[in-house]
Length: 147
Image (tube, rainbow, N blue to C red; front, side, top):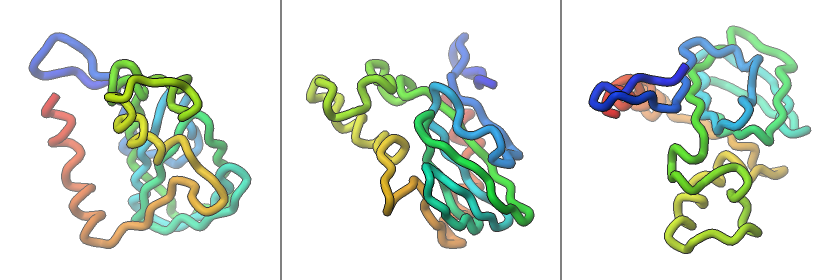
């Protein structure tokens, strides 16, 4: 569900799921940041079998395929947003380098590669240290309120 902006009369196109079991991923027309908060599991992501062990983060896009093979107390918090939220001119159609884009937007497009460019050695999964997990898990709510 989009978030209400506290400072302006508008909705912010970010959806947040406090308890995500990874069953409805990926989201159509969205990039997703999935913070695996608890448990361990085996998933098949884009045809590659990977182990998920909390804490970790997944960066996904609508192009990914994900299937949960095994889960043991696996749960997550997830944020979903459209690429244009990062920069108004960005959409899934122009996130590929083959598409011409104004040079000033190249940096923002490259930041979204974590979500859109996955291959055999990188499927958008990042392991977190306990300190990084604590830092991230304590901050999201305050950042959303800042809009």
